[in-house]
Image (cartoon, one colour):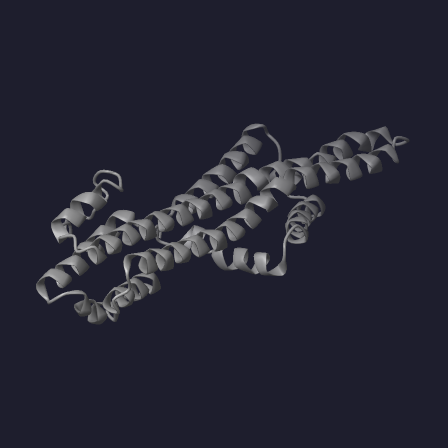
Length: 257
């Protein structure tokens, strides 16, 4: 679990609370139910209307990953590939990978290892693995795109709330004593629109995209590694080549070849 998202959101809202307190205002002045309901409900509804129910379900399914998922480690994939290459070298060829495929819980690795053991040629193997990676990328893009969509709609929904509230203000110009509090309350919708977009939705969308990018990088490393195994490249050479695909120091030291 990477706590960066939780820490960031807490600090962002904490900064807002600190500003409110330092300004001498009351926190209750920004915790008005009506604008909060409009902004949150309206933003989610607008994003839902812009896509399909399947898109929304994909986003809901992926959203918890922003808080609890462990970021993929592309460098760690090198260790798995090199281990598989050593099995091929030491245990009599590609058929030995069939047993290795049963030792992993990763569907991508299991499929690749089984395909190698079954004798898939280079073109078949590359096509299979590239299509799996592309499908994963498309699925993730739908999910984090939905979350980013909520963040895109939120500020505008907040402005709509402010306009509605200001209309109510204009209906009560006969009572000047209420104008100040009513105008202040009217701008709370805009505050929540901008705040929810920049404190919640856009950071969550960016985090989900980052997690997806790291996973795609990991799968790409596996792809190139397994293609090298299929071509008969030795484990040491595979290790050296794959290390050029990840940042320096990204391979776990205790497991590096």
